[in-house]
Each structure stands twice: as structure tokens, then as C-alpha cells.
Image (tube, rainbow, N blue to C red; front, side, top):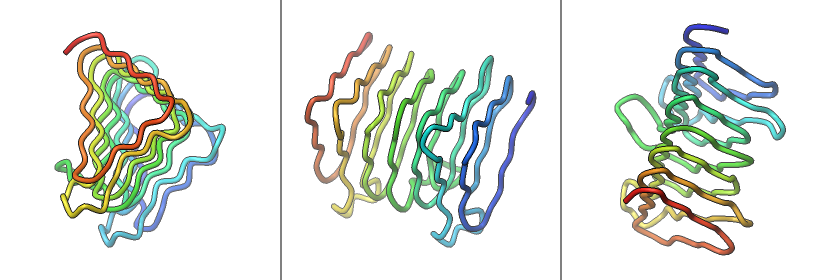
Length: 168
């Protein structure tokens, strides 16, 4: 499609097929009533993509992604105003974009190869209660053109991960 894509749900969004938007932003609100009971779950083997322009915005209590390609930014939060995910985030197969921003109060697990032509921000345990960690599982490759930022009040577990940065 061309233009904006909005999906609103109070309890979960399941993506079981590819979704492509030629131009314009995509917004997925999986916990629109903000009662901590709305997850965003993308099935294995599916792709969410903007092709010529547009961000992909995912707002949910917990997020599981497979393959996501954004012409511009990928933003993963609990709600507008950059409120962190209240639960956990799993980044699955492959993530490609200009900038990715993932903020969660819980854990962030990275199983995906991530390529950000500009910046990559990953923050677990945003509320600083010691209950969120960043785990790189398997051997994902992470590339950022300008800036990496991994932050957590707890632990970061890295085994077999390659990180390449072009900037500072």
C-alpha cells in the first residue's frame, strides 16, 4: 500500500503474513488500552517492510519480531512519548533500517542480524529495577553506520556476536 498503515488492538496483534508499505509510516498499537496485556507477535518467515520511505512503529507490552525492513526508522516502545516496553523484546531473523530504537523495562534478546545505516539504540531495564538484561543469542551480526548504544542496569551477555561501527 501507499500511505500510512495503522493497526490498533487492545489485546495482541499477530502478524502471520507479509506486510509492505511503499511509502508512509506503519503504526502497530498492540496494547492500545495500556493495560499491559497486548503483545505484538510476528510469525517466523514473515516480513514487515517499508520500501521507499517511512518508519515502522511498534507499541506493545511485549514484542517478538522476525524480519523487519524499514526505509527509515524502526521504533519499538510501549506507547507514544517513548515509554519503554513493559515486558520483553525478541528480535528474530533480520532487522534492516536507518535507525533502530528499542527500549524495554524487561529483557531484550537479539537473535537477528541487525543493520542500521545510521544509529542503533538498544536499552533493557529502562526502569532501572535490575530486572532487564540484553542477550545476544547465537551469532548475530550487528552493523551501525554511525552510533551503537547498548544500555542496561543489569547484564549484557555476548557470545559469538560481531559488531561493526562506521562512526563514533
